[in-house]
Amino acid sequence: MKIKLSEDKYMNITKLKVQRVIFYVLSITMAAVVCTQSIPSGRAAISKLDSKLQDIYFDKRNVMVYVGDTFEEKPISVPKNTKVSYTWELLDDGILTVDNGSIVAVNEGETTVGVSAGDFYAEIDVSVKYKPLPPNSSLPPVYYENLMIANYRNQLPSDYVPEDLIQIPAEYVAANYSTLYVGKETFDKYKELLRAMQSDLGTNNMHILSAYRSYARQSELYNNAVQGYIAQGKSSTEARALALNTTQTPGNSEHQLGTTIDVSNDYNTDHNFNQTPEGAWLAENAHKYGFIIRYPADKEELTRIEYEPWHIRYVGIYHATYMYVNNVCLEEYIDLQGEAAEAANAYAETHPASYD
Image (cartoon, rainbow, N blue to C red):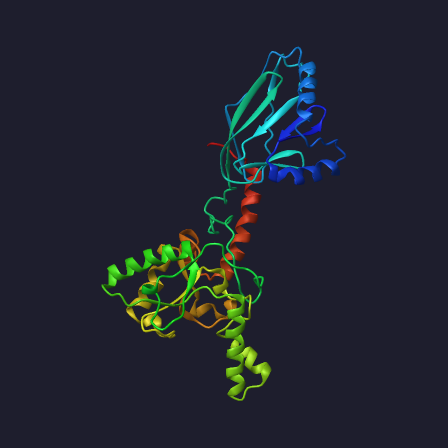
């Protein structure tokens, strides 16, 4: 579909972008025509304006831009003093989009931008990459991949349910535990981790105790913890504070994300799990498969959760490796990602995207 932005400018867009572009067009008082019937009349106008046109071309075969940059290459007309109206054409691949009447890079990748004028057509290949960090920067290089987090500061909606949940096969679940679910990618990576552990240790003692927990299940666990402390003689305020050391309030638990697994080699969660062969292996090798020990022993002030050597969270190999090497927890890592984004933006201002 095409939208007429002005008498001499057209832009191809996807159906999903129609409403957004209409808003931009109206906001800058341009006349918008959102129907295919406008194309023939537009073509007629182009034909009239381009009666002297002999050709159009780009003076480059390809161009590189950063994510967030505006595509600014313009075609050249032959002869150069010809008055030309262009129709821009974008691939529907999610790399470039229309934003406020401009073509903007939104995702890394390779694509093509085409432009036509009357019977003439030209195109240019466009490469898009993320803004780099300054040389020798120690900030997270994959700063642009946002990791979801659920903690005391970030609450998930009560109706949030991961889209890729699968039931964990019974052979991976501890005996006498209920049916468990987890995200498919998380489980696939866990199986890789488990095979490597069993190969290194020569044992097969790992069991999953807990995985995805719904908002309702979190409410049940939290309320049970509170009531348990009240039964010990604690006041309601004291009981709620104590419960938070081990159990998050509903919506604040990592388990709702579907990327978290609690594991054990003896069917129980134990703070000494890291001293077992399985726990020690996990602490040293989990990052190689994209997992982190979500609540480390030396980060309790930041996570607000006691050390849990059995609680692993899938974040991907790049993120997990950075956190392992630099001894940072997820809360710290996300803050560092923000710093990295700022550093990359500042560096890009003086170092435009290029193929060099």
